[in-house]
Image 1 (tube, rainbow, N blue to C red):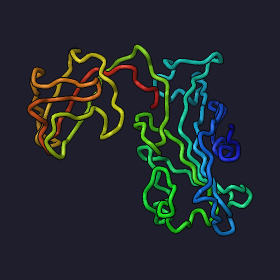
Image 2: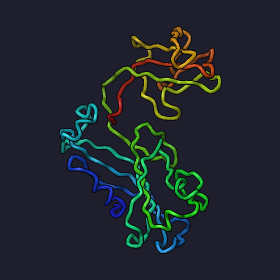
Image 3: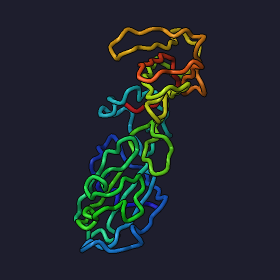
Image 4: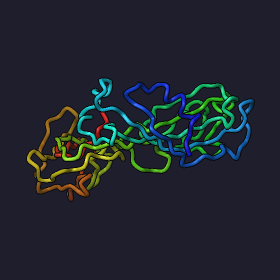
Length: 258
């Protein structure tokens, strides 16, 4: 099933160096059981996956770091996909003709809670999650499109799946300040996906600790800690609350996202 109306305005902003290849609809359902919102009438929810292609040789795309290392299709184009979530008037001509597009923070959705005094939700389904209905009664089309590559796969999140540079590795620094004593922490920021460890024993691998953000670093002996699952760090003695820990390690297959 191809979604056309909701993506038409989004496509306007794309230049010749990038294009929407296809959009697959995963779900298309009524909002609040099809109730009418003022003169706008009923709304529908569209959850989809948008597939894109970009020309790695186009001048506008040279700002994408290492795009030349991305795999290409038979046409020499780089492919990627993103989660798309739309709340729109069922009858498009009864809307106000305006899209409100939120640049999603960590895969979430804040438009409705911000403008309609609604309960926060990544997938609004109930009356409290639509608040005072201001945006819907005014006829806005609400759009979210994933753009962060390290979003965890959790219900309601919108993220982006980008190509990776196979065979490429590099140095990464991960910082962590625990709120309470713990024996493990992720190399990613909070619950975000980390860059995976390429070689736990690579030269330069190091864990340090500081008492304050601008304090001197003290190296923690390698025998006292280890990596777990190539995505985190573990230390039997525990990481102390308020201390600043830094891990420097070699990561692999980086996403081509910047």
